[in-house]
Image (tube, rainbow, N blue to C red; front, side, top):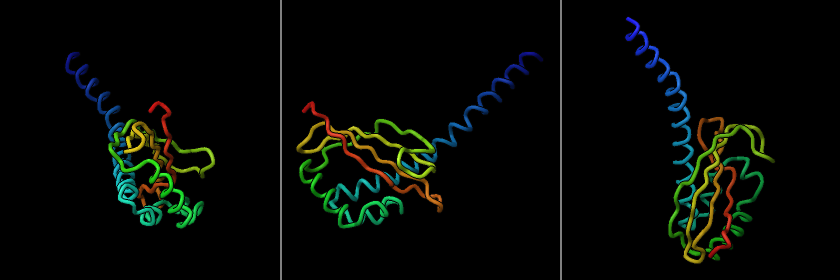
Length: 145
């Protein structure tokens, strides 16, 4: 009887920890999918569409024209995307300079035709419709090329 109780306790403990991990996994997958769709627009040179797909907060901080100009200048310098690999996903409820909410910070190791090593940070925020929309994007250039 003690062995059966111990097995049930072990199974219950496993489920107790597995359920939150699963709950965190789906939002991370959804945020990643949304971010990768958004990045695909940028990679295809569709900066106007990427601006439109971004979070309201993003669009309120930069005009479509400013976004197209600044992104275009950076991507012309970097050249075409060669590779992008997800490095990490971090969930947070606050980001400096941003309103509180639910955020995922995705970091990618990236390579471009004119810059072999770069790091991209994409930050989607969960909107009131339950969709992850990009509210931040940065390219960090590695000086080790």
